[in-house]
Image 1 (cartoon, rainbow, N blue to C red):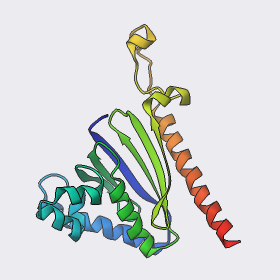
Image 2 (cartoon, rainbow, N blue to C red; image 1 turned 60 degrees about the horizontal axis):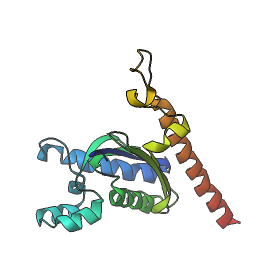
Image 3 (cartoon, helix red, strand yellow; image 1 turned 60 degrees about the vertical axis):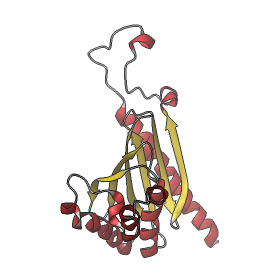
Image 4 (tube, rainbow, N blue to C red; image 1 turned 180 degrees about the vertical axis):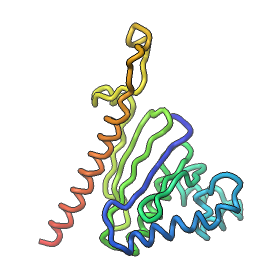
Length: 196
């Protein structure tokens, strides 16, 4: 398992209030950027998690974020935020963000994608009603069955990597996008069933 994991959570469907809530989340880390030498740690974006860090209560902090460390990696003002974390998806952090967005817009749907630096795995998921609705993880040993080839293995292939070898990153990301689309359709279907 690789050490660095990149995760992006974004609003898949949401009204203006949802986008305003995401803007506030992003303003929070931008507002404290000068305090940190390199990247803003995720815990610094909320008073309760900052207090846990200040009290050196790392066990509780881990429970609130979901990974050993987690930093803001990138953002898209009112649409998304990305993190880089240790060893896995910062699932508790994603739940915190999803709850904050759905408190602003109860019908908002958020999606996430996550991959480790190998990638040894990739995952995608959808939050609805402030909680995880569905997720899927694809391990690297499943890549070949999906037509994904990201690296050349000379032992397995029996020859050196050819000059024209192109890793199939785009196909992998298309699979993640298709998974998210299917999950969003599932949320919409379930909500329609509840309304009838």
